[in-house]
Amino acid sequence: MCRSIKTLRPPTTPEVSDEDIRAAALQYVRKVSGFRAPAAHNREVFDHAVDAVTAATRELLDNLQVRGGAPRREVSPPR
Image (spheres, rainbow, N blue to C red):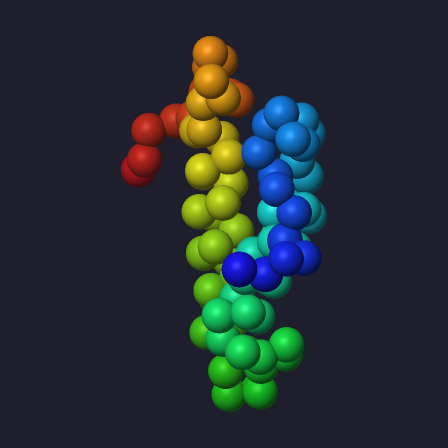
């Protein structure tokens, strides 16, 4: 995968900002799509993909259990 995406899970990174998560999502979408910046006609789908990967990453990090630990925080059930 993309080596510039850093590990965001605890205990490797105890505090993860929204900016860290979005940066990782952007790197992932860039790698998968093969575009550093999409053409105007692909901008909407590119941005949507970054938003979706950001949300999925946040959900993953919020629900991961570190061995012997509890989830990082309480998460409300899906709507």
